[in-house]
Length: 288
Image 1 (cartoon, one colour):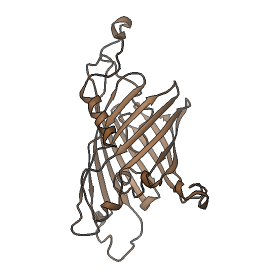
Image 2 (cartoon, helix red, strand yellow; image 1 turned 180 degrees about the horizontal axis):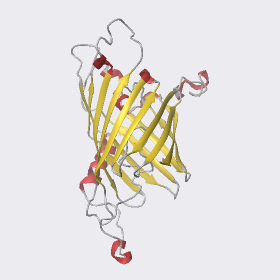
Image 3 (cartoon, one colour; image 1 turned 180 degrees about the vertical axis):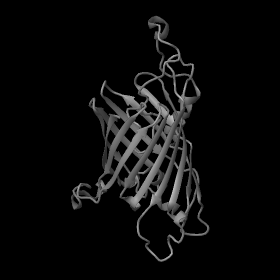
Image 4 (cartoon, helix red, strand yellow; image 1 turned 60 degrees about the vertical axis):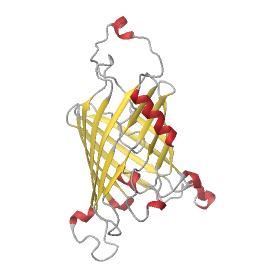
């Protein structure tokens, strides 16, 4: 996986590797016209992308992961469950600002999101990158597993802060890196760390007008708890299918969780152990 990250670093620190004709002058396209569809959706797979909904748009999303595929017929390759599910709503207050809420059955977690586009890539390369901040507050409402676990309400809260940096290199290929800081309020041992760091990265390759291949990898940058050796970096590979009204995505992942914070910090299965699951995401955008 380090080679995938190295490739993205090269891509972001140099000129595009694919030569393109300068069509801006030929067709008199404004140099400050924003690049569209860096990714197909506001999510790559589980991790947020730099895509922002148009103003006064509402996105409804269903995210679903089946159980572990490696158990074979024992659970019909994961289709018998238990499944991970997330429902979310995101509303774009402005062209640059989106507010969202979601709920996943993993740890009975509610999340509240704020996404703001600081820079948006332009076709004339006046602005060569898109830069978006993504902030997520997570609150679990499950019952205590032992007395005093949630003595304070703040023990139920985790949060995530990301800077999403993407570039659309040509009509087919886009890449993104996302420096991430997270805070977990409740830890198992006093020696465990509350502060977590990660560097998720993602890419999209457009195969045809309506079909794209996507991938994301979320390496953790610090050892933060006693169970760290039993946790793994999340890796997901999928196919996006645009159907006009919505985007349907089918993918494979080693993450049971769906929520951004949980995907990065709580992935406890590994591709190297053939432990992965089939999942799908489906989203629909409405004008309000």
